[in-house]
Image (cartoon, rainbow, N blue to C red):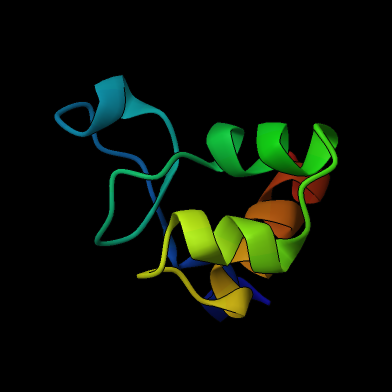
Length: 67
């Protein structure tokens, strides 16, 4: 599980330090917001074709763990 959370990066120089999917500027918050709005994982992956299903899962895990 720790390895999965290593896919989340927090760097003050990237998106003001908000947690993002490592190597991107996509915030965990943006992913969670889209899921809350009712978008499917497939819809999110269409919006962000450089993300993977694992990235979405990691964002959810991060939110649940309150990391």
